[in-house]
Image (cartoon, rainbow, N blue to C red; front, side):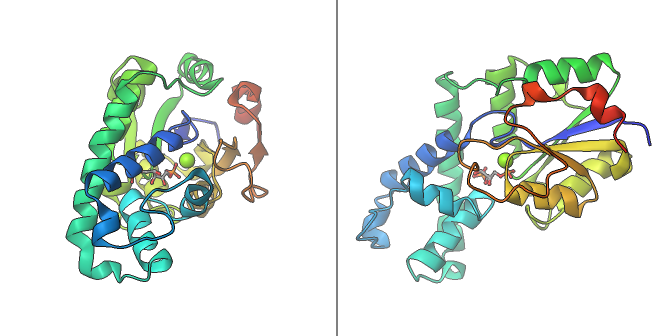
Length: 239
Ligand code: XBP
Ligand code: MG
């Protein structure tokens, strides 16, 4: 089938956002003095880079906080759903503020790939675990444009039942594109994202990001250090 669309993950693929997510989580934790509410003697509710790498195996911010409570601190997360939602809402605001400082740029090759895709008449989509507001802020900062002006379809984690590695968010993007998986390629940076794309029946280009270089990405159809290395003509001709 002819290539008709590219579907992009956001965090780690379009830009190295994950470090800002980490900082935003820590700011939200500190603001609520969580070390007093839920004692965490070792880490004082401060996720360092090494632990954040481990925590990233849980996709979604609310799910990550819940997993930290349950698996790391032994506190049942189900009885704290409201607090988790409130901390996460605060984290989302702080992430937007950090993005607004304007130091974040697109990863190398992203802008060129998107222009090339447009010239070839391809549709562009997003399939991300993060929420729509984060996509909108990132687009304004990194593309200097509204997300809707760049992407024909935007599917986010808060619109589906199961986040990555489940296929839901890619299936939603395909539904909105009205396309078959064989007409598209996915672009990912992580093991969970790759699993999600493959479970939706898509072929996937993977470009490891700062937080995913150690992950098993061996089931990628194409593995590249950087999206600069991708030629769309080769994807269009791929079986
Ligand atoms: C990215 C994520 C996200 C961000 C935080 O996964 O797991 O959870 O870390 O996002 P992917 P929210 O790149 O595979 O989509 O806090 O907004 O949920
Ligand atoms: Mg990602």
